[in-house]
Length: 154
Image (cartoon, rainbow, N blue to C red; front, side, top):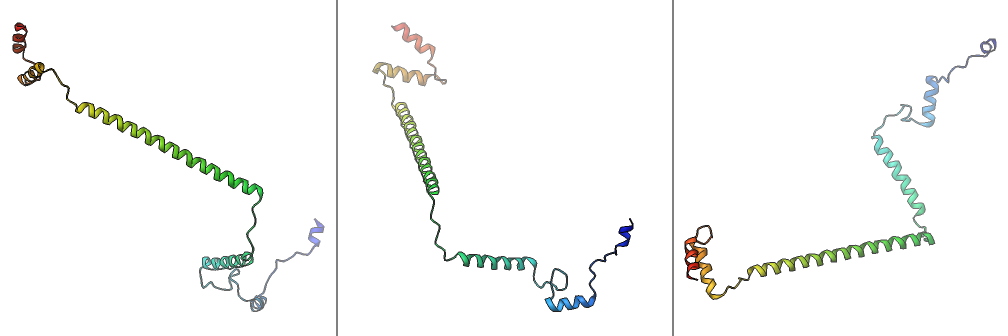
């Protein structure tokens, strides 16, 4: 304990007003320490600085020739291209298969429609009986009186 008290107490770095004024004159006012006011938003200042750095970087590498691809890189790019072609071929095959199945379904549907449009032909004697039966009853069933009379004749 005695050793600690024997050491002189160190004061923090105290800056007097005079020293502050001298440092302002020598280095100029700064925004960080509050001696200068910003006349533009910080975003604009930072964007400007970034644009300057980017322009310097681009200027350094502007005149360099492009780097040649390694064997691994070319192999990778070839594989990517082949897989892309394979995918496109599979899609074309699938689309062609769907188109063929659609055309077959349309053809089958048109065959059914053509079959329904054809009127079934009945023998001449039965055609007249069918017309009489269909018109005699409101429900579409033949009258028993007419059919009973025909059966008795036979």
